[in-house]
Image (cartoon, rainbow, N blue to C red; front, side):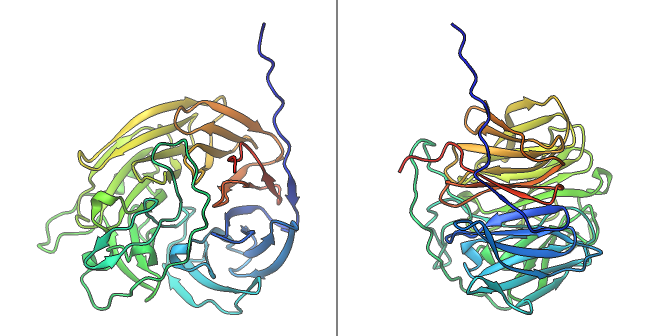
Length: 389
């Protein structure tokens, strides 16, 4: 007897209010709040219990819009970062559900592109000592076995600001205060300090002896970045970057002249990268017809395909792995959000609510909500495969 396929679930809420394409979104690390940014420069804060806007403001010019929004307990639960296509990144303070009138930090990157910035992800429960400093938990969490859930709230932890150190030392993790972003030279990745609004290093970077560095120019523009700090890196920032020619490069800031390794899993530009909570693997989406699950072996310095998922239609704008590491979701050009088992790569659901290109997808820290954003100006909230409490 054939197994009947269940119909795809409906969204539990639809958030309306943006007047332009919703380009990115992220959940507050501990409160029931959702941040969304749109192509007309607006940043909105939503209460996900009451499904209403609590605050909104034009944070970048309407002509350039918001490219990305991000937040993490590692930079402080009362902060959110917006990236505009006007060459700036701004850090905003949140109080009583509202935005500060002016940003606490403005970084002038002079980078005008579509690559979304990345905060530094650290492994779940990384309570490691680096030069006498304790590293706090990372942006997302995953149980090592992939079966048990940790639903405890992340505690906001401070970090120690280091002064007047070399570029290499400056990118050691107290590194939760850093962002990775495609640079003013679009084939390069830049690391910026959120405290000082200064650029720390570039990838690739010319050697001090004046020797020619590894070049990324022939790979085209950097289209996607994910910064992370695996346990094996002793607290230093690593970056996986995806390029216009479909290649991916894995960088360690201790050796900014040459990548750890480089691979080419895609035939078209890489548009989205997400590293899992263990910092030992992740997923990539591109303008071609496949999603790639890969593993990162820090001891060998290798990036190896774990599974390829072939799609009927091309174009994955965004990927997100749920904090417990069990499932992941993709946002597609075909107006669909797709949900998969992360360990096996098997399809679980195709969500067909949106009526235009899906630009972003994200999970709440407690794994209970997923949000999707689209060119159709709305945000959809979903409850799918929620962990048993």
